[in-house]
Image (cartoon, rainbow, N blue to C red):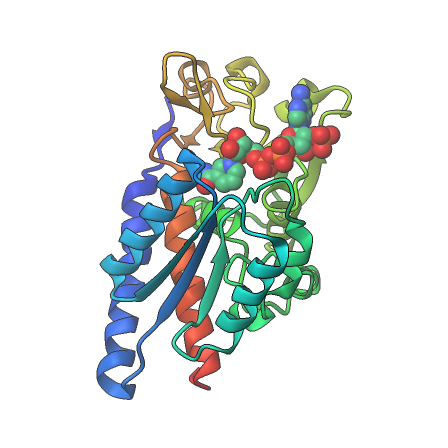
Length: 285
Ligand code: NAP
């Protein structure tokens, strides 16, 4: 039976580290860390994420600046705001909550954020830096996954790592981070043949598909570390992952639950990135 990886506890540890460092910067250098969060429209899920980010800022002692814009906001107005925030010294990190309304080009908005304040690490410059291993920020969800794997004491070197999903925000950077830790990495996607066979070879399996209970215990190698990034809302309102937990926990050595696994890590790593941004902008190592 697998040990459950407690994402809440690991994320609390990350937030405590960030809070302690933020307090030190405030006391010793008079530096206040600030995160600006921009939301356009009234999507309820996005609203929840933005509120959680605001609460996390308060918990670690950051200032948070929230910009809640009308659904009808034009791309030009949004880009103007991003440019103002790029120049605002109180703002160390800028996060534009995705998805944006259909009439706004997300790429144009991401590209407008100063790479030094791009705490989501979505700007092409930051994506490129991850490729060559010379990054300041890591994208929050894959970085959170790495921290969860680390919490199990698993050495990634030489391990067969399988990532299911190849999105720009999860799958691709996840594969790159595992590769940087010397894993032997396979990336799977919707056109992959023999998915079960590939999964059965995985010492470390990271699943980021967006399909409820898609990976079942019979696809998991005995003793594997299983990280479930998926967040799916069932008809009964319950949240569930991409991995069928009951069957998977019988095979895995470690497994993340949903909720309470990867989810809490994403916000914790956002706080960590914002702290890093503030230190870099102030010229502090
Ligand atoms: P996405 O952009 O929709 O990408 C999904 C990926 O899964 C695609 O690469 C797709 O392949 C692949 N896929 C779909 N069906 C498949 C199948 N039958 N077999 C193998 N691969 C398949 O999703 P995402 O943004 O990466 O998110 C994935 C999941 O993680 C979602 O549930 C999302 O809510 C969750 N998520 C959670 C957090 C968190 O903080 N916990 C953060 C981000 C995302 P193709 O490329 O071939 O289409």
